[in-house]
Length: 164
Image (cartoon, rainbow, N blue to C red):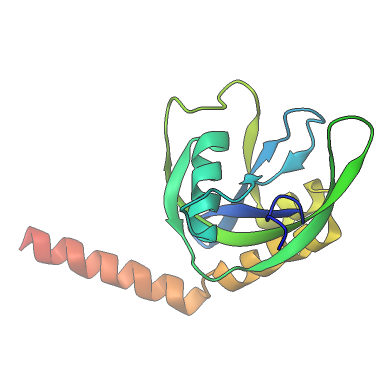
């Protein structure tokens, strides 16, 4: 059986946060082409695929949070290998709810990052399947108006209980 790297499997985090009723996605630039991408990398021995995706997110963007164990889907791209050849890579994508960002991280200064409304983020990435995954995540993670009102009510009740 071939190793995961030989058959071109990578794991990626799809970083997102909710700001009110809006879902934003964090994109980073690739080191060489400076295209907008999501954090991804090769399997890491001893780590599950979602945990490997979380490690990549921490190294490439300094983010931490909660990675979902069920993938959102996958996409393919051509990765330039050493020399002139390229290898087809299948990327398994895990939603990653960002809770914060470290001030210092491994690849700091090697990449840029930006938070974008999910609709805008989808237009910035090159791979059509990744665009679809971003749009799907945004739609499924955007709270309905009713859910937002319930969250506001619970927050208000909680503050009233602390005050009283």
